[in-house]
Length: 224
Image (tube, rainbow, N blue to C red; front, side, top):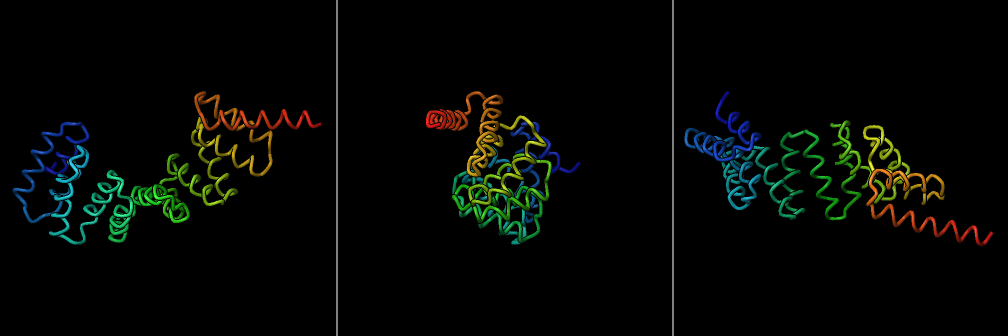
């Protein structure tokens, strides 16, 4: 096992000082190779030492302008700092340089979501879901962006897929309830709000929706 791999293993074990020592040795032994700088940058990012992490990632890019994981690291760094437009620039560069994993597409999609550009997030979240179809969080975020963009039928289908993977997903039930409400399927809407509250009794959005539904139903009964 080489020192980079050992360092990554130590990071995963939360042995950060030992990992830093190994990455530093890698850089000293191979000062013109980008990988040591990238791994040290990832460690610093994990420790939220953003300024230092940025310097390490940029040094890696200075050594190799095609170092895709350095661009991805910078994307994560700017995302953590809520600089979403800058994050998008670097995630896109990482993707263009060959990172084809679900994570980069998911982070691109969520960066657009955080800027409330839901339509722009859809193709990235859709691709992330294609690459990692078992991840219910990716699917859920994809469904949310579809719903926010008024693609209600497609969103409904995605939220149902989330429930197939995780039956006790309160937020999917809540959003399905909202979609049913838009489609004037009152009983189904109530069912989903009730399910959201059964799973998560403190679900404020579902509780508020259920309260409004009960009030509406009582008013309808009174009118009749």
